[in-house]
Image (cartoon, rainbow, N blue to C red):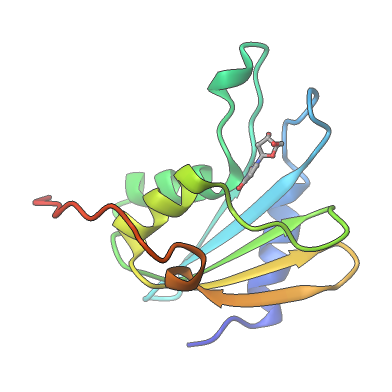
Length: 131
Ligand code: THU
């Protein structure tokens, strides 16, 4: 199933909870399971900067903790002039747990870019997960 505006809107709502006092760059993510559930995530920063967790990872880890393992789409919303692609570590994690999902990147101005994850992350490190 492709990504409709609803998933973008979920990511926008998620973004409102971002804790980004250091960068002031708020990110929202909405990850959809193949069963249609949506898990929201926002970036959470910390005074020890390296402990910051990206919105995409918050959404994914929350979904996994809820027992979900099959995903088909993620929407990411930022305030940037052009929609911002996920960072490298998030791409790796999404690849391992979500496979080649649809990725929609949007900004608050209504611009949107659509990708398959394999386009954003063409040469992944593959490791077979037993669990
Ligand atoms: N950030 C995300 O939430 N997702 C990304 O894919 C890239 C960056 C966050 C981390 C940090 O809180 C802020 O954006 C600025 O880097």
